[in-house]
Image 1 (tube, rainbow, N blue to C red):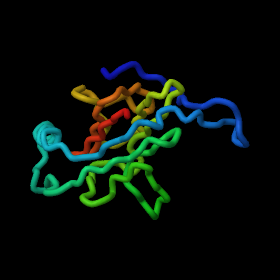
Image 2 (cartoon, helix red, strand yellow):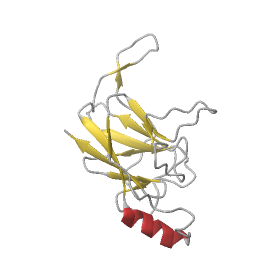
Image 3 (spheres, rainbow, N blue to C red):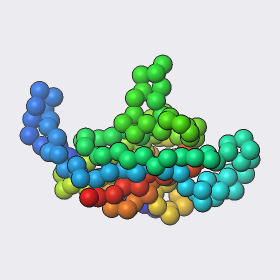
Image 4 (cartoon, rainbow, N blue to C red):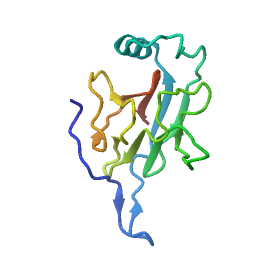
Length: 160
């Protein structure tokens, strides 16, 4: 099972009109989005899926997202449903196995980050753990952690 889970978000202190203000912890982190063939091949083998029906992308440029907000949503954009994730995985080549509202990254007061799976259909894996992270529970993250979503997408957290 992944690291200890916690159901409460962090990174908040003081007050604003909403009663909260972000302390700014974690702003020196980035999320690097890329494709990982080994994860894709393992998933195809484990699920018995036909790679012809969900081919691995021939080209997936690495994308970097600075973690500059108190939280960032991971998913695929849906104009009709009004979903605009901060880490938008609907960009070409779109990974159709990523849920529209897949996961959430939360800033912590100590400058670290946590992951929350939002009940994604295909789950969220962390590093080399065989079981998905528990849905709706906060899981602490560390520098270099790899978050696997969809059929081939990996998001690596890097500090500094």
